[in-house]
Length: 117
Image (cartoon, rainbow, N blue to C red; front, side, top):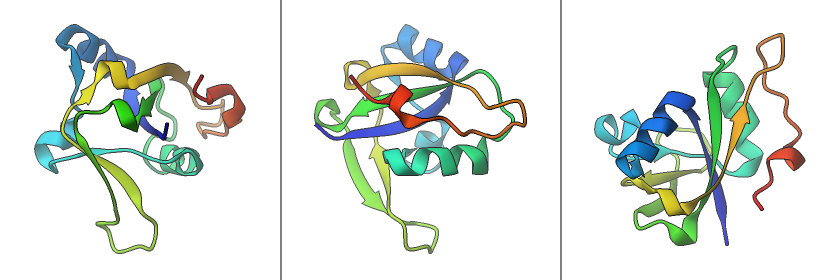
């Protein structure tokens, strides 16, 4: 099983549970949902979500997704990121963990606490 990760707001996740699937805003604007591999999560969080409260981290089993996952870099760098081209099935989300910044607004989690089980 391969696990990828997506940072969402608690409200977005609650809406996904109500609707039966998760669709980030980027699915309608960019055509895919931005995700990260384990080693990319903290850097992405500090780049985009620094100081933001009310977040959760979705642990997504790629083998349970009905949508296609493509590793690509669309911004000109060398690093590849997983993009999900379609909604994320709720049964593909193996775990949802609270994802809060430290007092200084930075994310510095020890990923052992966020490992998929």
